[in-house]
Length: 448
Ligand code: NDP
Image 1 (spheres, rainbow, N blue to C red):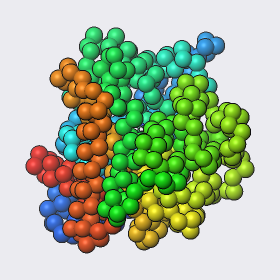
Image 2 (image 1 turned 180 degrees about the horizontal axis):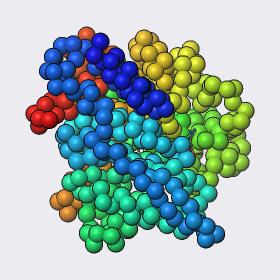
Image 3 (image 1 turned 90 degrees about the horizontal axis):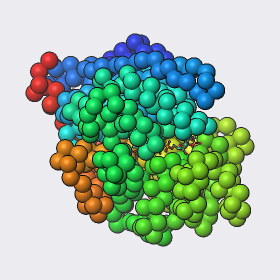
Image 4 (image 1 turned 180 degrees about the vertical axis):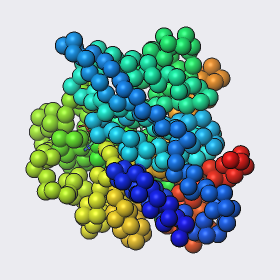
């Protein structure tokens, strides 16, 4: 079969890129019905072309630490597909970054951006640089060195990077400052900018808020709501914090957050102000949260049973994985379902393993795959680009309203497509096919 041949080709050609194989397999298997239905996709070799990035850029980043020692990291920008708009996607700074991770994220981004209803192609980038424990001056020097190469490849109508793990407002500021020095241009070339210099209101909140709006839509269709319900959230970065905030707006009770060192279970509800203080201002570990709020439970990662993530053992009505890829496996999925979980809405990219997803789909709970559920961040980045292009800025309520309406339309489109293909609750199939058709048709229109 055509899709299986492509998956095999990817595994043979890039044997070490496990996360990329996983992302391709998840998408291609769900595209089988549309490939079988419409011969034009195979005739135009669309799948072979979609799994290959338009361009892969890797470069060395030389910078100096506070001790005066020269350091070298690797930087990446993978421009995956520009059939429906300029390349768009975040930059990740984390020691685990390699070309396979950036490729899986870029591939996912293509489909996600297509679903937003905006004209955005897909890309991703980053570096194996670890901002943790670095001084502001070190982060600044690294960002400047990274931009010394990246500036050649980006532009407001070409490629517009944003943040991701390890890249927040501070890093975007330093990157933008260096771009401006190198080019003498004040362009909307990055999103997630500061509010006084081109950023959009509601961009920091967008991914978390959007992920909760998506859960709300899935539940509404079944006559359910989040009000009064216990929810679990993993991660404690940008996505997790604003997921917790929106859950409170909807009268839900978010009881957990986690980081790379451990998990907090605060059964009366996470103290959002304290969480923001520790993570956004002090940039400390959640151990500090547990020290201050002595009535909560803190489980250290070193005490976890191997192969499990304690955050998913907390009974909940809805779960919001918002940390990183493959943070929820089959064991965790079984535990969630046994404890009565009715909804999983993914804030992170590819947080659930293929086996966990299969179980969620089989159980017919509300399952919102990351591509659809976390598209709010890039959607508001698209709105930031629109505001920059018109040299005008919208108020918080207007952006939030647009975000809400985009999340509703992503749900409707994914759900309608799932129904069209005879599997009404399967939003993996629905979102992948809906995202795919728009890009594939544009590629065919534009020729080879
Ligand atoms: P942040 O850097 O702000 O936060 C990441 C959080 O996840 C931190 O709490 C971090 O813990 C934790 N984490 C990261 N890696 C691991 C790991 N290997 N094991 C356990 N915990 C880990 O990133 P974001 O909140 O921006 O991103 C979170 C996820 O959401 C990612 O998958 C990202 O790709 C996705 N995403 C983000 C968007 C955005 O707008 N920011 C948009 C769409 C998706 P610690 O602090 O200890 O490192």
